[in-house]
Length: 353
Ligand SMILES: [Zn+2]
Image (cartoon, rainbow, N blue to C red; front, side):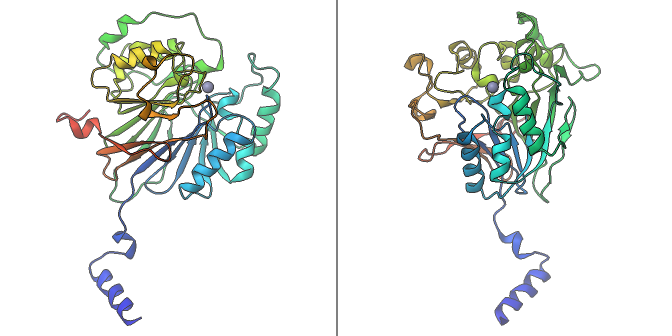
């Protein structure tokens, strides 16, 4: 007792609390396998959790998310964000809400109906309304999701770049993006993909892009006439890597260092998207949630960078850990992988971003 009080006095005298002695934690991102759906779990240095999308309806995806969240020390999801109303993104919400509390819900706004899914939408949206107790918040381009900050740590910021097909405005006088002239328009996408919420998550110098299932022509709006995103460290390959998303003019503009596919064994990870990524100067690695069984070895990434090589998988995830100072990060594939380490762009270049 006596030594403890002496320690307390000393800590008090030096202006430190016993907590300050613990090593500072950084920012973690868990890419959870939902077999062609999306579930990206972010845990901030303050221990706050943000889940962007929550997989398919049924037990499997909700249970995998719950397991990953529990392993990350979470007893609740603080913020659940649904990028758009396709069942591989919001179908797991009601089941997950039964497994653990979800404190705040965000989406692009709830439509009256969804033309491309008239059968499932009414049931699934009812379950979502029930889980969220009708209190979800609609996000629009330019909104920031308020997150707790940690004293002495870099700022963690989750910024909404697009919603309902609208993107953040160009800054007055912003330079024109020369890459945008290579855009080849595609027919207008009338599905909800085009209305996806899209986010830029930053932590110090680290920048991560998650655009949900945003499609081609709206991707173009994000980088035309000026680039409204800037270079990123890590790119969650949009729309599971389907080729009606991942407009090369966007990828060439944001020029990621690391790309992570949340693909399924037979969904996404399109060879044309992989080809676009491989042409990016400075790209260090491509990670895949699943081996793409529909193409050969050449069109898949290195086997060490694939979390689930077989169709009958164990739902292995990909984990990204950003150092407390935001200057570097590691990516680890599955439960047995070894961490691959990368410097953030801001730390690697003299002129920052
Ligand atoms: Zn999807």
